[in-house]
Length: 72
Image (cartoon, rainbow, N blue to C red; front, side, top):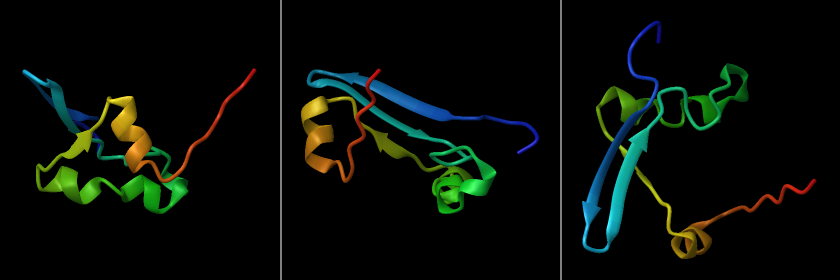
């Protein structure tokens, strides 16, 4: 990972709204010591594949497996 894309992103505007996909070679966390979350997207990045990127809050609520609340 000495050089190259840090994130690959593809977006398309459709009649129903944007459709997007991305892949991050350093994984979701980007922290080497985080274990599986550091390499969870590596295979997709190596084979030039992408993962869906959701921005519709209703869809996100339907597929979410965890929720974190941050308050001041």
